[in-house]
Length: 244
Image (cartoon, rainbow, N blue to C red; front, side, top):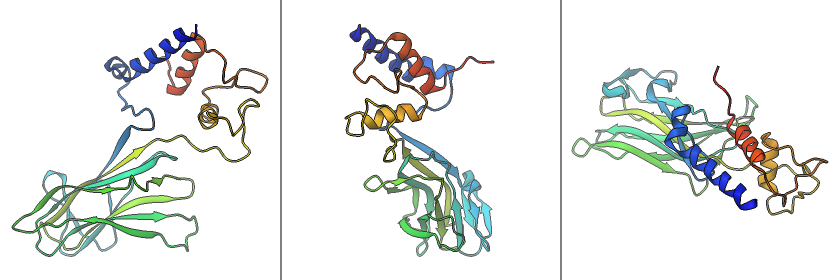
């Protein structure tokens, strides 16, 4: 019975990842903690800071017109995810200028507290050897955990001169999902203490509404799982519903 339940679980995972599943729901799927999802912020959706005179160039690239320009690009990332990489699609045909990519973190709700800015990367093109492509900042060694309840993270693109020689088209944010760490003293089930090997995953299941346990305040971590229970787990986890 147990082997049959495991086979059903594996089959369900395969169906979710298959083309047939994609035909039912066109939303991009990023399951698991290893998959990386990209959120694209086009340059036209970035905010030009006061004094920046911007112009739309060819192929959706943006440039500053006659003076250096600063643009702020805000991603919509899920709370609790890890920001592991940032890329900017840029063009640099200037001998002296550059496209600078900076990360800005506002970690306080107090209007008087200043946000911190850190330089990530900058282009290094010239009229002889222009740079045109993706400029990447790898954050995977020290990823940023997104917390939209009290923080604001965004990218500031700085064009050091206003001309057709410095342009950018988009900023791309790459993130990974992760299992949240339960707060101390928030044990949900009497038979799953914080010292239990699978405590973190089981708490995530409970917090997400995927499971309510096996009754009497317990989870029964070593109990068998029926086909009906597996179906319920997946329906709750994926938010499955009948179309109207």
